[in-house]
Image 1 (cartoon, rainbow, N blue to C red):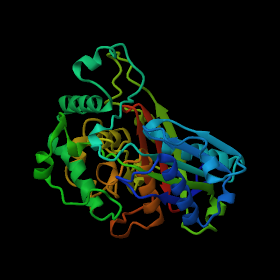
Image 2 (spheres, rainbow, N blue to C red; image 1 turned 180 degrees about the horizontal axis):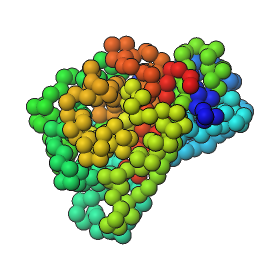
Image 3 (tube, one colour; image 1 turned 30 degrees about the vertical axis):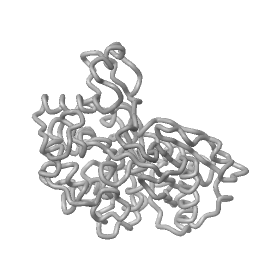
Image 4 (cartoon, one colour; image 1 turned 120 degrees about the vertical axis):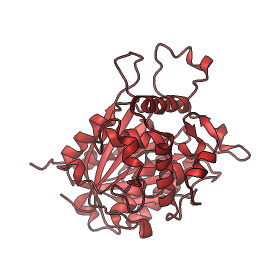
Length: 388
């Protein structure tokens, strides 16, 4: 039996501001993204009756955005924070609101502006990594500050357990750079090979600079409305076929290994079940890629390969142009731009519309992941250009 939420709503508007070293405040970028999404959909701001807001580490935009936008009457308004899983969560809540008559047209927007003039991107501290555990007070003594060293330890543990190699991490970065070369919006489009990857500086072993996401200023917005209404608007609808969430954290207990078995293992099967689909039905993936390791472990937990086989799965060009599972076809957060979960969402919408140009990949069914904290907060979307 078809799930009642399967294809009940669709994404119809997409707004993407200029990305990178764009020295404007986050609220200004968010407002621009919303108006770009309205124009893209062929809607007026008076058509919006819902607004969901998420901000990055700078927290420079919040609920008062509705006043900046001049929205006088909203049936749905809130600020949401699930870190990198927020974009997927916002779309899920917007979908449920529209499907149940709480709103008709909901805009979900993310914006951030951590980069400042005359400041290196490495000076930006993404310190949030989830709730503290019993060892938290000792961690700074050993240099464990922020998310980066924790992800590095997770990757190293995967290497120790399963034999994952540096070259396999590199394969993720290289395949995404190949996609980025075909994306005019991507920040990093120059060719990348294994020699170039190995020549890049170490950050925290086993991560080179090129294993780590970009830091970007910018804003992205999407508009969610009913499937029926979406079909009459300016852009091809991208139907929301399934969605789910799952959240956990590192308790510090020896029997709990969330860096190897992530919350995606619970979220993905439920999203596919709502979509009435199997992993083998998926045409492409847009995977949250704060680090190369995140892609490998998410593909494992989503069921594209067995646990421990992610490294070999990505090693043969499987994710790149011409590969069997096109993944992060815009370049992802590693090579395109870093807008938390809106990076994979925005590319999924472009691909779902068939507007990817030379990077367009098969799009029958698109899986989209969102990841926050250190592999702790997870959202999954299943999107398609066709309704169920």
